[in-house]
Image (cartoon, rainbow, N blue to C red):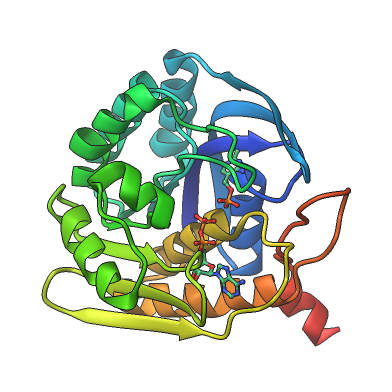
Length: 263
Ligand SMILES: Nc1ncnc2c1ncn2[C@@H]1O[C@H](COP(=O)(O)OP(=O)(O)O)[C@@H](O)[C@H]1O
Ligand SMILES: Cc1ncc(COP(=O)(O)O)c(N)n1
């Protein structure tokens, strides 16, 4: 049976990030994508113009509908908006055996908040402990742990600080540093450095969502965490290289780059 992957995230009306990026990634990687929507954003290439959370009850009901009938081989979480939603989602994840990729989304590429400041503590103490892989970017790492990352050595310190909250693996994304796009994956004993050439392309809307969904897709197919992260890094790097202009601001990565290169 086709592997089934569930994203628990916010909707991006512009189609480049959030649930829309997740489902496109899942299609491109050959798994069946499903969604639990936590919030709806009015969003485009220029920023986030509005955001509305769903009631916790609606989030729980979507999750139960999918888990009880269709079944889930891996979960990915993205925008969770509030402490209440973070805690509800952490509880749902702790009740499943499926691996969970937690992207602790804090702000959009334009700096618009996607998580209330009052929810940070719930992310640290409730959500990170149930994660198989946590994938913070550099701003999220600083917000969650206080560690500032300016060099490759700092990536190791940041990963150690994230692991203290209990995820099995930490993937610290160095995408916002200069030089190569270097990420560090570690479980505290193994270290895997993932290096890709930096593409000088401003159309990077959706990179983090795409990477986390690609990891979840790999895990659902039965890959190990290092294998899934390696394959996901290759997919997101190609998607960034092919990112394209849409609207007047930051365009999306190209989730369909592999289909297009095969045309
Ligand atoms: N310009 C770029 N060229 C190549 N890879 C990049 C670039 N920007 C980010 N990445 C990679 O994209 C992935 C997502 O990272 P990042 O953009 O930091 O996440 P987020 O969207 O959460 O801020 C990481 O693997 C990172 O190294
Ligand atoms: C609904 C939603 N979720 C997440 C992001 C983060 O996007 P990115 O992947 O570019 O960090 C976003 N802009 N909107």
